[in-house]
Image 1 (cartoon, rainbow over the protein chains, first blue to last red):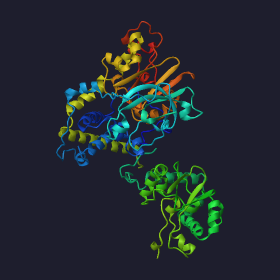
Image 2 (image 1 turned 180 degrees about the horizontal axis):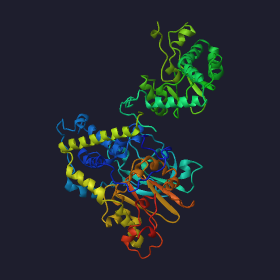
Image 3 (image 1 turned 60 degrees about the vertical axis):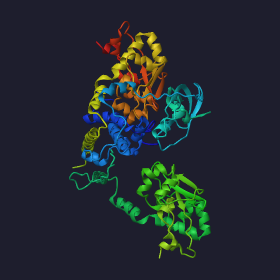
Image 4 (image 1 turned 30 degrees about the vertical axis):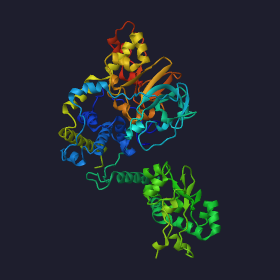
Length: 219
Length: 212
Length: 206
Protein backbone atom coordinates (compact mmCIF):
# COMPACT_ATOMS: atom_id res chain seq x y z
CA UNK A 1 0.00 0.00 0.00
CA UNK A 2 1.06 3.58 -0.59
CA UNK A 3 1.16 4.15 3.13
CA UNK A 4 3.17 6.04 5.69
CA UNK A 5 5.90 3.41 5.60
CA UNK A 6 6.90 4.15 1.99
CA UNK A 7 9.12 7.09 2.77
CA UNK A 8 12.21 6.66 0.59
CA UNK A 9 12.94 10.15 -0.71
CA UNK A 10 10.43 11.95 1.48
CA UNK A 11 11.52 15.29 2.89
CA UNK A 12 11.09 17.08 6.16
CA UNK A 13 12.16 14.53 8.76
CA UNK A 14 15.32 16.33 9.78
CA UNK A 15 18.80 14.92 10.50
CA UNK A 16 19.62 11.37 11.49
CA UNK A 17 20.08 11.39 15.26
CA UNK A 18 22.12 8.47 16.56
CA UNK A 19 21.88 7.91 20.31
CA UNK A 20 25.22 7.30 22.00
CA UNK A 21 25.35 4.07 24.02
CA UNK A 22 21.85 3.26 22.99
CA UNK A 23 20.28 0.38 24.92
CA UNK A 24 18.74 -2.45 22.93
CA UNK A 25 15.37 -1.68 24.52
CA UNK A 26 14.36 1.70 25.88
CA UNK A 27 11.85 0.44 28.39
CA UNK A 28 10.41 -2.65 29.97
CA UNK A 29 7.31 -2.58 27.82
CA UNK A 30 9.39 -2.54 24.66
CA UNK A 31 11.10 -5.76 25.70
CA UNK A 32 7.78 -7.40 26.36
CA UNK A 33 6.25 -6.12 23.13
CA UNK A 34 9.21 -7.49 21.18
CA UNK A 35 9.09 -10.91 22.79
CA UNK A 36 5.30 -11.13 22.61
CA UNK A 37 5.39 -10.37 18.90
CA UNK A 38 7.82 -13.17 18.16
CA UNK A 39 6.17 -15.70 20.45
CA UNK A 40 2.58 -14.87 19.55
CA UNK A 41 3.53 -15.23 15.90
CA UNK A 42 4.05 -18.91 16.49
CA UNK A 43 0.68 -19.34 18.18
CA UNK A 44 -1.10 -17.06 15.73
CA UNK A 45 0.36 -18.71 12.68
CA UNK A 46 0.81 -15.54 10.68
CA UNK A 47 3.81 -15.02 8.43
CA UNK A 48 6.27 -12.13 8.45
CA UNK A 49 4.68 -10.53 5.40
CA UNK A 50 1.36 -10.38 7.21
CA UNK A 51 3.15 -8.78 10.16
CA UNK A 52 4.68 -6.14 7.98
CA UNK A 53 1.36 -5.32 6.39
CA UNK A 54 -0.30 -5.13 9.79
CA UNK A 55 2.32 -2.57 10.80
CA UNK A 56 1.91 -0.47 7.67
CA UNK A 57 -1.84 -0.67 7.60
CA UNK A 58 -2.82 2.43 9.53
CA UNK A 59 -3.32 6.12 8.76
CA UNK A 60 0.01 7.61 7.69
CA UNK A 61 -0.14 10.34 10.31
CA UNK A 62 -0.34 7.64 12.99
CA UNK A 63 2.42 5.54 11.47
CA UNK A 64 4.73 8.53 11.26
CA UNK A 65 4.16 9.66 14.84
CA UNK A 66 4.11 6.31 16.64
CA UNK A 67 7.34 4.87 17.97
CA UNK A 68 8.76 1.70 16.47
CA UNK A 69 7.51 -0.65 19.14
CA UNK A 70 4.19 1.15 19.41
CA UNK A 71 3.70 0.20 15.78
CA UNK A 72 4.78 -3.38 16.45
CA UNK A 73 2.39 -3.62 19.35
CA UNK A 74 -0.53 -2.09 17.47
CA UNK A 75 0.06 -4.60 14.68
CA UNK A 76 0.25 -7.45 17.17
CA UNK A 77 -3.07 -6.44 18.69
CA UNK A 78 -4.62 -6.18 15.24
CA UNK A 79 -3.44 -9.60 14.13
CA UNK A 80 -4.55 -11.28 17.34
CA UNK A 81 -7.97 -9.65 17.13
CA UNK A 82 -8.31 -10.50 13.44
CA UNK A 83 -7.86 -14.14 14.33
CA UNK A 84 -10.18 -13.88 17.34
CA UNK A 85 -7.40 -14.97 19.66
CA UNK A 86 -7.94 -12.03 22.00
CA UNK A 87 -10.49 -9.23 22.16
CA UNK A 88 -10.36 -5.53 22.99
CA UNK A 89 -12.38 -6.21 26.14
CA UNK A 90 -9.81 -8.67 27.35
CA UNK A 91 -6.96 -6.25 26.74
CA UNK A 92 -8.86 -3.48 28.49
CA UNK A 93 -9.17 -5.52 31.69
CA UNK A 94 -6.02 -7.61 31.30
CA UNK A 95 -7.97 -10.77 31.87
CA UNK A 96 -9.19 -13.70 29.87
CA UNK A 97 -12.90 -13.37 29.28
CA UNK A 98 -13.35 -16.02 26.65
CA UNK A 99 -11.89 -19.51 26.43
CA UNK A 100 -8.78 -19.76 24.27
CA UNK A 101 -8.98 -21.08 20.74
CA UNK A 102 -6.93 -24.17 20.11
CA UNK A 103 -3.65 -23.40 18.37
CA UNK A 104 -1.36 -25.90 16.70
CA UNK A 105 1.89 -24.73 18.21
CA UNK A 106 3.33 -22.43 20.82
CA UNK A 107 6.90 -21.31 21.36
CA UNK A 108 8.35 -22.96 24.46
CA UNK A 109 11.48 -21.71 26.20
CA UNK A 110 13.34 -24.86 25.22
CA UNK A 111 12.59 -24.17 21.55
CA UNK A 112 13.77 -20.58 21.52
CA UNK A 113 17.44 -21.08 20.69
CA UNK A 114 16.69 -23.63 18.01
CA UNK A 115 13.88 -21.63 16.45
CA UNK A 116 15.95 -18.46 16.36
CA UNK A 117 18.94 -20.30 14.95
CA UNK A 118 16.90 -21.92 12.23
CA UNK A 119 15.11 -18.73 11.31
CA UNK A 120 12.64 -18.76 8.43
CA UNK A 121 14.42 -19.13 5.09
CA UNK A 122 12.37 -17.92 2.15
CA UNK A 123 14.20 -19.53 -0.76
CA UNK A 124 12.14 -22.18 -2.53
CA UNK A 125 12.78 -24.84 -5.15
CA UNK A 126 11.45 -24.10 -8.59
CA UNK A 127 11.39 -25.58 -12.03
CA UNK A 128 10.97 -22.16 -13.66
CA UNK A 129 13.79 -20.13 -15.09
CA UNK A 130 14.47 -16.50 -14.27
CA UNK A 131 13.26 -14.08 -16.92
CA UNK A 132 16.24 -11.79 -16.42
CA UNK A 133 19.98 -12.12 -16.01
CA UNK A 134 22.66 -9.89 -14.54
CA UNK A 135 23.23 -6.86 -16.74
CA UNK A 136 19.72 -6.78 -18.20
CA UNK A 137 17.97 -3.44 -18.27
CA UNK A 138 14.55 -3.59 -16.64
CA UNK A 139 11.78 -1.18 -15.76
CA UNK A 140 10.14 -1.28 -12.36
CA UNK A 141 6.41 -1.47 -12.94
CA UNK A 142 4.03 1.34 -12.25
CA UNK A 143 1.82 -0.45 -9.78
CA UNK A 144 -0.14 0.77 -6.78
CA UNK A 145 -1.58 -2.12 -4.82
CA UNK A 146 -3.57 -1.22 -1.73
CA UNK A 147 -2.28 -4.42 -0.20
CA UNK A 148 1.26 -5.29 0.83
CA UNK A 149 4.09 -4.88 -1.63
CA UNK A 150 7.83 -4.38 -1.34
CA UNK A 151 8.33 -2.21 -4.41
CA UNK A 152 8.86 1.28 -2.99
CA UNK A 153 7.26 4.22 -4.82
CA UNK A 154 10.56 5.95 -5.44
CA UNK A 155 11.62 3.26 -7.96
CA UNK A 156 8.29 2.57 -9.66
CA UNK A 157 8.37 3.33 -13.36
CA UNK A 158 12.14 3.74 -13.32
CA UNK A 159 14.80 2.04 -15.42
CA UNK A 160 17.40 -0.06 -13.67
CA UNK A 161 19.90 -2.84 -14.25
CA UNK A 162 19.82 -6.37 -12.88
CA UNK A 163 22.75 -6.54 -10.50
CA UNK A 164 22.25 -10.12 -9.45
CA UNK A 165 19.80 -13.00 -9.81
CA UNK A 166 19.24 -13.92 -6.19
CA UNK A 167 17.01 -16.98 -6.35
CA UNK A 168 13.41 -18.02 -6.06
CA UNK A 169 11.84 -16.62 -2.91
CA UNK A 170 8.48 -16.40 -1.20
CA UNK A 171 6.54 -13.53 -2.78
CA UNK A 172 5.38 -11.10 -0.08
CA UNK A 173 2.53 -9.59 -2.10
CA UNK A 174 0.81 -12.99 -2.15
CA UNK A 175 2.00 -14.23 1.22
CA UNK A 176 0.78 -11.18 3.11
CA UNK A 177 -2.67 -11.50 1.59
CA UNK A 178 -2.97 -15.12 2.64
CA UNK A 179 -2.82 -16.19 -0.99
CA UNK A 180 0.09 -18.57 -0.46
CA UNK A 181 3.84 -18.28 -0.84
CA UNK A 182 3.75 -18.08 -4.65
CA UNK A 183 7.57 -17.98 -4.86
CA UNK A 184 9.00 -15.78 -7.60
CA UNK A 185 12.45 -15.08 -8.94
CA UNK A 186 14.11 -12.35 -6.92
CA UNK A 187 16.70 -9.91 -8.25
CA UNK A 188 18.83 -7.07 -6.99
CA UNK A 189 18.08 -4.17 -9.31
CA UNK A 190 20.33 -1.11 -9.32
CA UNK A 191 19.22 2.40 -10.28
CA UNK A 192 21.33 5.44 -11.03
CA UNK A 193 20.71 8.30 -8.64
CA UNK A 194 19.98 10.53 -11.62
CA UNK A 195 17.26 8.18 -12.85
CA UNK A 196 15.54 8.25 -9.49
CA UNK A 197 16.05 11.82 -8.39
CA UNK A 198 16.68 13.86 -11.53
CA UNK A 199 19.42 15.73 -13.29
CA UNK A 200 20.62 17.47 -10.12
CA UNK A 201 21.23 14.19 -8.31
CA UNK A 202 24.64 13.21 -7.00
CA UNK A 203 26.27 11.29 -9.89
CA UNK A 204 28.23 9.08 -7.53
CA UNK A 205 25.14 7.51 -5.99
CA UNK A 206 23.30 4.38 -7.10
CA UNK A 207 20.47 2.71 -5.21
CA UNK A 208 19.37 -0.90 -5.37
CA UNK A 209 16.26 -2.69 -4.27
CA UNK A 210 15.56 -6.38 -4.22
CA UNK A 211 12.66 -6.89 -6.60
CA UNK A 212 10.64 -9.96 -7.47
CA UNK A 213 9.95 -10.70 -11.10
CA UNK A 214 6.30 -9.56 -11.00
CA UNK A 215 7.62 -6.06 -10.19
CA UNK A 216 9.70 -5.86 -13.35
CA UNK A 217 9.21 -5.35 -17.06
CA UNK A 218 11.77 -6.07 -19.78
CA UNK A 219 12.89 -3.11 -21.87
CA UNK B 1 5.60 20.95 16.67
CA UNK B 2 2.72 18.73 15.82
CA UNK B 3 1.19 15.64 17.23
CA UNK B 4 -1.54 13.38 16.03
CA UNK B 5 -4.88 13.52 17.76
CA UNK B 6 -5.80 10.09 16.76
CA UNK B 7 -7.88 8.71 19.52
CA UNK B 8 -11.01 10.77 19.54
CA UNK B 9 -9.78 13.50 21.84
CA UNK B 10 -11.12 16.94 21.13
CA UNK B 11 -8.65 19.70 21.68
CA UNK B 12 -9.50 20.22 25.32
CA UNK B 13 -6.34 18.85 26.83
CA UNK B 14 -5.85 22.24 28.37
CA UNK B 15 -5.24 21.10 31.93
CA UNK B 16 -6.86 24.20 33.37
CA UNK B 17 -6.66 26.82 30.61
CA UNK B 18 -9.86 28.14 29.09
CA UNK B 19 -8.20 28.50 25.72
CA UNK B 20 -6.64 25.78 23.64
CA UNK B 21 -3.02 25.97 22.66
CA UNK B 22 -3.84 27.11 19.11
CA UNK B 23 -6.12 29.83 20.42
CA UNK B 24 -3.36 31.08 22.72
CA UNK B 25 -0.77 31.11 19.98
CA UNK B 26 -2.91 32.87 17.40
CA UNK B 27 -3.96 35.43 19.98
CA UNK B 28 -0.33 36.01 20.88
CA UNK B 29 0.75 36.46 17.26
CA UNK B 30 -2.14 38.77 16.52
CA UNK B 31 -1.35 40.90 19.56
CA UNK B 32 2.32 41.19 18.68
CA UNK B 33 1.70 41.99 15.01
CA UNK B 34 -0.78 44.68 15.98
CA UNK B 35 1.57 46.13 18.57
CA UNK B 36 4.36 46.28 16.03
CA UNK B 37 2.07 47.92 13.53
CA UNK B 38 2.46 45.21 10.91
CA UNK B 39 -1.25 44.60 10.62
CA UNK B 40 -4.37 46.66 11.07
CA UNK B 41 -7.21 45.40 13.24
CA UNK B 42 -9.94 46.64 10.95
CA UNK B 43 -8.38 44.87 7.97
CA UNK B 44 -8.29 41.59 9.88
CA UNK B 45 -11.93 41.95 10.83
CA UNK B 46 -12.89 42.81 7.24
CA UNK B 47 -11.07 39.76 5.89
CA UNK B 48 -12.92 37.49 8.26
CA UNK B 49 -16.28 39.14 7.52
CA UNK B 50 -15.69 38.85 3.77
CA UNK B 51 -15.10 35.12 3.77
CA UNK B 52 -17.55 34.26 6.52
CA UNK B 53 -20.46 36.19 5.12
CA UNK B 54 -19.92 37.77 1.76
CA UNK B 55 -18.11 35.39 -0.55
CA UNK B 56 -19.45 31.88 -0.80
CA UNK B 57 -20.89 29.17 -3.01
CA UNK B 58 -23.91 31.36 -3.72
CA UNK B 59 -21.66 33.19 -6.16
CA UNK B 60 -20.89 30.06 -8.12
CA UNK B 61 -24.51 28.98 -7.98
CA UNK B 62 -25.45 32.19 -9.74
CA UNK B 63 -22.87 31.52 -12.43
CA UNK B 64 -24.19 28.03 -13.00
CA UNK B 65 -27.82 29.13 -13.03
CA UNK B 66 -27.05 31.74 -15.65
CA UNK B 67 -25.21 29.15 -17.75
CA UNK B 68 -28.28 26.93 -17.54
CA UNK B 69 -30.64 29.57 -18.90
CA UNK B 70 -28.41 31.59 -21.20
CA UNK B 71 -26.66 29.67 -24.01
CA UNK B 72 -24.49 32.65 -24.98
CA UNK B 73 -23.26 33.01 -21.42
CA UNK B 74 -22.68 29.30 -21.18
CA UNK B 75 -20.50 29.38 -24.28
CA UNK B 76 -18.55 32.33 -22.96
CA UNK B 77 -18.18 30.70 -19.55
CA UNK B 78 -16.70 27.55 -21.03
CA UNK B 79 -14.38 29.49 -23.31
CA UNK B 80 -13.22 32.16 -20.88
CA UNK B 81 -14.28 31.46 -17.33
CA UNK B 82 -12.48 34.42 -15.80
CA UNK B 83 -14.15 36.94 -18.08
CA UNK B 84 -17.63 35.44 -17.98
CA UNK B 85 -17.59 35.09 -14.20
CA UNK B 86 -16.01 38.52 -13.89
CA UNK B 87 -18.98 39.96 -15.75
CA UNK B 88 -21.15 38.94 -12.82
CA UNK B 89 -18.86 40.80 -10.42
CA UNK B 90 -17.00 37.82 -9.08
CA UNK B 91 -13.23 37.55 -9.27
CA UNK B 92 -10.07 38.63 -7.59
CA UNK B 93 -8.19 36.55 -5.05
CA UNK B 94 -8.14 32.89 -6.03
CA UNK B 95 -10.31 33.73 -8.98
CA UNK B 96 -7.92 35.46 -11.34
CA UNK B 97 -7.71 32.48 -13.63
CA UNK B 98 -10.97 30.59 -13.64
CA UNK B 99 -11.80 27.62 -15.81
CA UNK B 100 -15.31 26.22 -15.98
CA UNK B 101 -15.65 22.46 -16.54
CA UNK B 102 -18.78 21.15 -18.20
CA UNK B 103 -20.37 17.96 -16.91
CA UNK B 104 -22.25 15.95 -19.54
CA UNK B 105 -24.02 12.61 -19.46
CA UNK B 106 -20.73 11.04 -20.61
CA UNK B 107 -18.25 13.13 -18.66
CA UNK B 108 -17.95 13.93 -14.96
CA UNK B 109 -15.37 16.41 -13.68
CA UNK B 110 -13.88 16.44 -10.20
CA UNK B 111 -11.53 19.07 -8.80
CA UNK B 112 -8.88 18.56 -6.14
CA UNK B 113 -5.66 20.06 -4.90
CA UNK B 114 -3.50 17.13 -3.84
CA UNK B 115 -0.66 19.35 -2.71
CA UNK B 116 -2.56 21.77 -0.51
CA UNK B 117 -6.09 23.26 -0.83
CA UNK B 118 -6.31 25.39 -3.97
CA UNK B 119 -9.96 26.26 -4.53
CA UNK B 120 -11.86 28.90 -6.50
CA UNK B 121 -12.54 31.23 -3.57
CA UNK B 122 -14.11 33.88 -5.79
CA UNK B 123 -17.02 31.61 -6.68
CA UNK B 124 -17.11 29.10 -3.85
CA UNK B 125 -15.70 30.92 -0.83
CA UNK B 126 -13.23 29.08 1.40
CA UNK B 127 -12.92 25.32 0.97
CA UNK B 128 -14.56 22.90 3.38
CA UNK B 129 -12.38 20.83 5.72
CA UNK B 130 -12.88 17.60 3.79
CA UNK B 131 -11.53 19.20 0.61
CA UNK B 132 -8.32 20.22 2.41
CA UNK B 133 -7.86 16.93 4.23
CA UNK B 134 -5.74 13.90 3.43
CA UNK B 135 -8.49 11.43 2.57
CA UNK B 136 -9.80 13.55 -0.32
CA UNK B 137 -6.44 14.84 -1.47
CA UNK B 138 -4.90 11.39 -1.59
CA UNK B 139 -7.80 9.45 -3.06
CA UNK B 140 -9.42 11.78 -5.57
CA UNK B 141 -6.60 11.26 -8.08
CA UNK B 142 -6.27 7.52 -7.47
CA UNK B 143 -9.84 6.39 -6.81
CA UNK B 144 -12.41 9.06 -7.71
CA UNK B 145 -15.23 6.53 -7.86
CA UNK B 146 -14.37 5.46 -4.32
CA UNK B 147 -14.49 9.09 -3.25
CA UNK B 148 -17.85 9.59 -4.96
CA UNK B 149 -19.12 6.57 -3.07
CA UNK B 150 -18.18 8.37 0.16
CA UNK B 151 -20.54 11.11 -1.08
CA UNK B 152 -23.23 8.57 -1.82
CA UNK B 153 -22.80 8.80 -5.57
CA UNK B 154 -22.37 6.08 -8.12
CA UNK B 155 -21.84 6.97 -11.76
CA UNK B 156 -22.33 4.60 -14.70
CA UNK B 157 -19.23 2.53 -15.42
CA UNK B 158 -18.75 4.13 -18.81
CA UNK B 159 -18.90 7.73 -17.59
CA UNK B 160 -15.51 9.30 -18.13
CA UNK B 161 -14.23 10.79 -14.88
CA UNK B 162 -11.79 13.66 -15.28
CA UNK B 163 -9.93 14.62 -12.18
CA UNK B 164 -8.29 18.04 -12.21
CA UNK B 165 -5.40 18.55 -9.79
CA UNK B 166 -5.10 22.29 -9.22
CA UNK B 167 -1.33 22.52 -9.14
CA UNK B 168 -0.99 26.01 -10.61
CA UNK B 169 -2.95 29.25 -10.22
CA UNK B 170 -5.79 28.08 -12.43
CA UNK B 171 -8.91 27.49 -10.39
CA UNK B 172 -11.54 25.09 -11.57
CA UNK B 173 -15.28 25.18 -11.15
CA UNK B 174 -17.57 22.40 -12.29
CA UNK B 175 -20.75 23.29 -14.16
CA UNK B 176 -23.11 20.47 -13.26
CA UNK B 177 -25.94 19.33 -15.52
CA UNK B 178 -29.24 21.10 -15.13
CA UNK B 179 -31.73 18.91 -13.27
CA UNK B 180 -34.77 17.72 -15.19
CA UNK B 181 -38.12 19.27 -14.41
CA UNK B 182 -36.85 22.83 -14.10
CA UNK B 183 -38.10 24.21 -17.38
CA UNK B 184 -39.01 27.85 -17.12
CA UNK B 185 -37.45 28.35 -13.70
CA UNK B 186 -35.91 31.73 -12.92
CA UNK B 187 -32.15 32.04 -12.44
CA UNK B 188 -32.65 32.74 -8.75
CA UNK B 189 -34.74 29.64 -8.21
CA UNK B 190 -32.30 27.54 -10.23
CA UNK B 191 -29.39 28.88 -8.18
CA UNK B 192 -31.05 27.37 -5.10
CA UNK B 193 -30.52 23.93 -6.62
CA UNK B 194 -26.80 24.36 -7.21
CA UNK B 195 -24.89 22.88 -4.28
CA UNK B 196 -21.29 23.65 -3.43
CA UNK B 197 -20.33 20.02 -3.84
CA UNK B 198 -21.82 19.91 -7.33
CA UNK B 199 -19.41 22.70 -8.32
CA UNK B 200 -16.45 20.75 -6.96
CA UNK B 201 -17.57 17.56 -8.61
CA UNK B 202 -18.38 15.55 -5.52
CA UNK B 203 -22.10 16.08 -5.70
CA UNK B 204 -25.08 16.77 -7.92
CA UNK B 205 -27.44 19.70 -7.90
CA UNK B 206 -30.59 19.25 -5.87
CA UNK B 207 -33.59 17.92 -7.68
CA UNK B 208 -36.66 20.16 -8.03
CA UNK B 209 -38.68 18.11 -5.56
CA UNK B 210 -36.41 19.30 -2.78
CA UNK B 211 -37.61 22.84 -3.21
CA UNK B 212 -41.12 24.02 -2.50
CA UNK C 1 -1.14 26.30 31.65
CA UNK C 2 -0.58 25.57 28.04
CA UNK C 3 -0.86 22.05 26.75
CA UNK C 4 2.32 20.06 27.05
CA UNK C 5 3.58 17.63 24.44
CA UNK C 6 5.58 15.83 27.09
CA UNK C 7 2.49 15.15 29.15
CA UNK C 8 0.74 13.86 26.08
CA UNK C 9 3.61 11.48 25.28
CA UNK C 10 3.69 10.27 28.87
CA UNK C 11 -0.05 9.62 28.83
CA UNK C 12 0.24 7.74 25.56
CA UNK C 13 3.17 5.68 26.79
CA UNK C 14 1.62 4.62 30.04
CA UNK C 15 -1.45 3.62 28.09
CA UNK C 16 0.78 1.45 25.91
CA UNK C 17 2.54 0.03 28.95
CA UNK C 18 -0.78 -0.99 30.42
CA UNK C 19 -1.92 -2.59 27.22
CA UNK C 20 1.32 -4.51 26.78
CA UNK C 21 1.08 -5.83 30.28
CA UNK C 22 -2.57 -6.68 29.80
CA UNK C 23 -1.93 -8.48 26.56
CA UNK C 24 0.93 -10.47 28.04
CA UNK C 25 -1.33 -11.54 30.88
CA UNK C 26 -4.10 -12.62 28.55
CA UNK C 27 -1.81 -14.45 26.13
CA UNK C 28 -0.13 -16.26 29.00
CA UNK C 29 -3.44 -17.19 30.63
CA UNK C 30 -4.69 -18.56 27.33
CA UNK C 31 -1.57 -20.61 26.92
CA UNK C 32 -0.57 -18.93 23.66
CA UNK C 33 2.82 -17.83 24.98
CA UNK C 34 5.28 -19.33 27.43
CA UNK C 35 6.63 -16.66 29.83
CA UNK C 36 9.99 -18.40 30.03
CA UNK C 37 10.25 -18.21 26.24
CA UNK C 38 9.54 -14.48 26.38
CA UNK C 39 12.32 -13.93 28.90
CA UNK C 40 14.71 -15.96 26.80
CA UNK C 41 13.89 -14.01 23.65
CA UNK C 42 14.64 -10.77 25.45
CA UNK C 43 17.83 -12.08 26.97
CA UNK C 44 19.03 -13.37 23.60
CA UNK C 45 18.79 -10.02 21.90
CA UNK C 46 19.76 -7.91 24.89
CA UNK C 47 22.90 -9.79 25.77
CA UNK C 48 23.88 -12.51 23.37
CA UNK C 49 23.28 -11.54 19.76
CA UNK C 50 24.82 -8.24 18.79
CA UNK C 51 27.35 -6.39 16.64
CA UNK C 52 30.21 -8.19 18.35
CA UNK C 53 29.21 -11.12 16.13
CA UNK C 54 29.60 -9.15 12.95
CA UNK C 55 32.85 -7.67 14.21
CA UNK C 56 34.31 -11.15 14.42
CA UNK C 57 33.20 -11.89 10.87
CA UNK C 58 34.87 -8.74 9.61
CA UNK C 59 38.02 -9.28 11.63
CA UNK C 60 38.33 -12.78 10.20
CA UNK C 61 37.79 -11.47 6.69
CA UNK C 62 40.60 -8.97 7.30
CA UNK C 63 43.09 -11.61 8.34
CA UNK C 64 42.10 -14.71 6.41
CA UNK C 65 41.97 -14.27 2.60
CA UNK C 66 40.34 -17.65 2.05
CA UNK C 67 37.60 -16.78 4.54
CA UNK C 68 37.19 -13.40 2.89
CA UNK C 69 36.69 -15.09 -0.45
CA UNK C 70 34.10 -17.44 1.01
CA UNK C 71 32.33 -14.54 2.71
CA UNK C 72 31.92 -12.62 -0.51
CA UNK C 73 30.98 -15.69 -2.47
CA UNK C 74 28.27 -16.89 -0.08
CA UNK C 75 28.02 -14.98 3.16
CA UNK C 76 25.27 -16.95 4.91
CA UNK C 77 27.36 -20.09 5.12
CA UNK C 78 30.62 -18.27 5.83
CA UNK C 79 28.96 -16.45 8.72
CA UNK C 80 27.43 -19.72 9.94
CA UNK C 81 30.96 -21.14 10.16
CA UNK C 82 31.41 -18.80 13.13
CA UNK C 83 28.15 -20.00 14.67
CA UNK C 84 25.98 -17.06 13.69
CA UNK C 85 22.80 -17.81 11.82
CA UNK C 86 19.05 -17.72 11.82
CA UNK C 87 16.25 -15.28 12.19
CA UNK C 88 16.53 -12.22 9.96
CA UNK C 89 19.82 -13.51 8.59
CA UNK C 90 18.76 -16.55 6.62
CA UNK C 91 20.13 -14.99 3.43
CA UNK C 92 23.07 -12.68 4.00
CA UNK C 93 25.13 -10.89 1.38
CA UNK C 94 28.45 -9.31 2.32
CA UNK C 95 29.28 -5.99 0.66
CA UNK C 96 32.88 -5.01 0.18
CA UNK C 97 33.95 -1.43 0.80
CA UNK C 98 36.94 -0.36 -1.27
CA UNK C 99 38.74 2.94 -1.70
CA UNK C 100 36.52 3.54 -4.72
CA UNK C 101 33.22 2.23 -3.38
CA UNK C 102 31.27 2.76 -0.17
CA UNK C 103 28.22 0.65 0.62
CA UNK C 104 25.31 1.75 2.78
CA UNK C 105 22.39 -0.41 3.88
CA UNK C 106 18.87 0.78 4.69
CA UNK C 107 15.33 -0.51 4.82
CA UNK C 108 13.16 2.36 3.63
CA UNK C 109 9.95 0.41 4.13
CA UNK C 110 10.50 -0.79 7.69
CA UNK C 111 13.67 -1.90 9.54
CA UNK C 112 15.09 -5.01 7.90
CA UNK C 113 18.51 -5.63 9.41
CA UNK C 114 20.86 -8.62 9.71
CA UNK C 115 20.06 -9.66 13.29
CA UNK C 116 22.45 -12.63 13.65
CA UNK C 117 25.48 -10.46 12.99
CA UNK C 118 24.36 -7.07 14.26
CA UNK C 119 21.60 -7.77 16.78
CA UNK C 120 18.52 -5.58 16.78
CA UNK C 121 18.71 -2.32 14.84
CA UNK C 122 19.22 1.02 16.59
CA UNK C 123 16.38 3.53 16.67
CA UNK C 124 18.00 5.81 14.10
CA UNK C 125 18.11 2.99 11.55
CA UNK C 126 14.38 2.39 11.98
CA UNK C 127 13.42 6.05 11.98
CA UNK C 128 12.13 8.31 9.24
CA UNK C 129 15.20 10.54 8.81
CA UNK C 130 17.49 7.64 7.87
CA UNK C 131 14.90 5.67 5.96
CA UNK C 132 13.87 8.65 3.88
CA UNK C 133 17.28 10.17 3.23
CA UNK C 134 19.67 7.25 2.83
CA UNK C 135 18.37 6.53 -0.67
CA UNK C 136 18.11 10.15 -1.73
CA UNK C 137 21.05 11.83 -0.03
CA UNK C 138 23.52 9.28 1.38
CA UNK C 139 26.28 11.86 1.58
CA UNK C 140 24.01 14.09 3.66
CA UNK C 141 23.34 11.15 5.95
CA UNK C 142 27.05 10.40 6.26
CA UNK C 143 27.55 14.03 7.22
CA UNK C 144 25.09 13.50 10.09
CA UNK C 145 27.51 10.77 11.16
CA UNK C 146 30.46 13.10 10.80
CA UNK C 147 31.78 11.46 7.66
CA UNK C 148 32.76 13.01 4.35
CA UNK C 149 33.86 10.75 1.55
CA UNK C 150 35.78 11.89 -1.54
CA UNK C 151 33.48 13.22 -4.27
CA UNK C 152 34.44 10.45 -6.63
CA UNK C 153 33.83 7.58 -4.23
CA UNK C 154 30.92 5.59 -5.61
CA UNK C 155 28.21 5.27 -2.99
CA UNK C 156 26.02 2.21 -3.34
CA UNK C 157 22.89 2.25 -1.26
CA UNK C 158 21.12 -1.07 -0.74
CA UNK C 159 17.44 -0.92 0.16
CA UNK C 160 16.62 -4.19 1.93
CA UNK C 161 13.22 -4.83 0.42
CA UNK C 162 13.36 -8.65 0.56
CA UNK C 163 14.64 -11.21 3.09
CA UNK C 164 18.17 -10.72 1.82
CA UNK C 165 20.18 -9.05 4.60
CA UNK C 166 23.26 -7.01 3.93
CA UNK C 167 26.47 -6.75 5.92
CA UNK C 168 29.03 -4.15 4.97
CA UNK C 169 32.64 -5.26 5.27
CA UNK C 170 34.53 -2.03 5.91
CA UNK C 171 38.14 -1.55 4.88
CA UNK C 172 40.79 -2.60 7.34
CA UNK C 173 42.30 0.46 9.02
CA UNK C 174 45.97 1.15 8.30
CA UNK C 175 48.46 0.63 11.11
CA UNK C 176 46.99 -2.72 12.16
CA UNK C 177 49.53 -5.04 10.60
CA UNK C 178 50.07 -8.14 12.65
CA UNK C 179 47.03 -7.55 14.88
CA UNK C 180 45.14 -10.64 15.93
CA UNK C 181 41.44 -11.12 15.19
CA UNK C 182 40.29 -10.22 18.71
CA UNK C 183 42.12 -6.92 18.66
CA UNK C 184 40.91 -6.15 15.14
CA UNK C 185 37.33 -6.94 16.10
CA UNK C 186 37.46 -4.10 18.62
CA UNK C 187 37.90 -1.65 15.76
CA UNK C 188 34.84 -2.84 13.89
CA UNK C 189 31.91 -0.62 14.87
CA UNK C 190 28.28 -1.48 14.31
CA UNK C 191 27.84 1.60 12.16
CA UNK C 192 30.74 0.58 9.94
CA UNK C 193 28.90 -2.67 9.17
CA UNK C 194 25.77 -0.74 8.17
CA UNK C 195 27.75 1.70 6.09
CA UNK C 196 26.89 4.70 8.22
CA UNK C 197 30.30 4.74 9.83
CA UNK C 198 33.92 3.74 9.50
CA UNK C 199 35.92 1.39 11.73
CA UNK C 200 37.87 2.88 14.61
CA UNK C 201 41.45 3.70 13.99
CA UNK C 202 44.22 2.01 16.03
CA UNK C 203 44.80 5.15 18.04
CA UNK C 204 41.19 5.00 19.29
CA UNK C 205 41.96 1.72 21.01
CA UNK C 206 44.66 1.08 23.63
